[in-house]
Length: 544
Image (cartoon, rainbow, N blue to C red; front, side, top):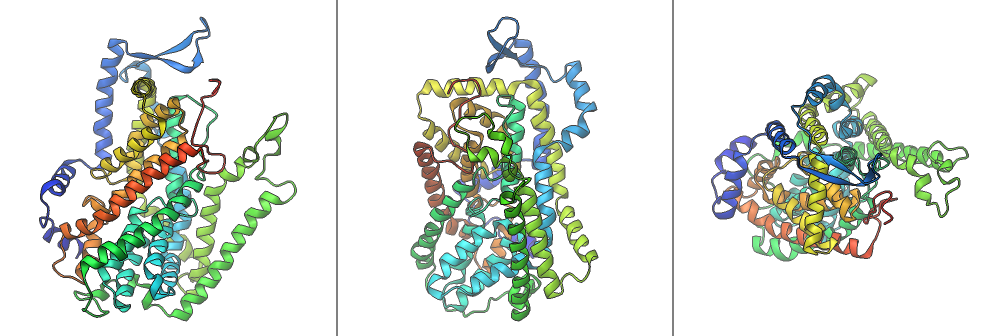
C-alpha cells in the first residue's frame, strides 16, 4: 500500500526546488555503491596527489631526525604496501570498524524491546494519558524520546498521534505533523544517549584514529548528552508553537470524526490501542522494575567500594584531576548498559503480556533484530574500507590541515564555522538520507579539520547531528517519507507529497535555525557538550 501510494503521488506538487531535489536525489546511487564509487575516485586522487608530491606538516608530531614538524605526504593506494594491506587486512578493516560493535550490541537489546511491544506500549501510554490541552507537547516529547525505539517511533506513534488528535476534535494531520517533527526532525534530541550516539561516535572515533592527531582520544557515547538534552528543551516549545499556531490554523477545523478512512485498521497489529489496557499496564510495571534493576546495578558498580567502573588510579599524581577522568570506564560501559536496559525491560514486558513465552522467543527476537541490520552490515563494510583507505592515503589529514589553514585565513569565528557546518549537513541531508552514511563520508575530513581549529570531536559530532535532523522531514528521499504520506491519506485522501513537504517546511526552518543558534551559543559560552566532553579543544602537546 505504501509503495503504491508513493508511486501514485510521486509527481504531485513536485515542481521548483522540491522537484529538483527529488530528481537530483533519485539519480544518486544506493549509499553502498556510493561508497564504492568514492573508493574508486579516492584511488585515482591518491595516485595524482602522490605523483604531484602533495603534503602537509603534521601539527603535533616531530621528525625524529631533524626535530622539525613531521611532513605527511600523500600515498598512492595502488602502492604495493597499500594493495597488500587492502587484501590481507580486509576482515580486520571490517570487523574493527568502531560503529559496528557499538550498534550491534545496542540493537540486540533494542530489538527485544521493540518486538515485545514494550516501546510501542510505553509511547502509547504516555501519549494517551496526556491532558487534551497538553496533547501537542506530550506528542512531541514522546516522539523525541521515542528515537531510542527506532522504527517504532515512525510506525506506531505517528499514526497514533493522528487518531488521538481526531478523538480530541482536532485535525489529525496536525497530530501526524507534530509526531513526525519530533521523531524525525528532532532525531538527535533526547534526554539520554542511545543507539544513535553509539553509531555516530563510533564513526567519530574512527575518524580521529585515522588522522592520528590524538591517539589517546576515545569515544564516549555520552559525549553529547548535555547538548541533546538542551535540544529537547529547545525543540519541544518550537514544535508546540509551529503545530498549534502555524500548521493547525492553516489546516482548518476538523469535521471528519475520529475514524480514519481508507483502511485505518490495516496496521492494527502495530497499534497499541488494540491491546488489552490492563495487560499492557501490567507489562509496563514489570518493565519498569527491570529498568530500575539495571539502574541500581550500574549505580552499585559506580558507588560501591572497589567498583569496576571507577578508575581510581587515573588521578594518581595528577594535579586538578577531573572526576570525569575517573569515570571514563563508566562512560565507556554505557553501550552495555543500554543493551541490558532494553533487553531486560523488553523481556519483562514480553513475559507479562505473553509476547515472550520462553527463552526461545527471546533469542528469536534478538536474531530478528540482527536480520534487520543486514543492510547496515553491507553499508558498514563499504564505509569501513572508505574510511580506512582515506587514512592510508594520508589525504584526510592533508585535507584537514590545508582546510583548517584556509578557514583560519578567512578570519571567521569558530562558532560561525560550526554554524556553517550545520547548514552544510542539512543541505546534504536532502540528497543522502542515511545519517551514518553521511557522517562516514564527512567525518574523516571534518573531524580532524575542526580539531585543528580548536573544536573537539564531540563538537563536530554535535554540529553534524543538528543539520542531519532538521531537514529529514522535508526530503522525499527519507525512507519513511512515503509511509507518513500513507498515514496522512487515511484522513485526507487527496493529500499529496508536495502537501506533506509544505506542511513540514515550517518545522524544518525553525528547527534548523534554533539548532544552529544553539550550537553557536554553546561554543561561545564554552559549555561542556557532555560529561568530560568540552566543545573547545587543544591538540596534545600544542600548549593550547
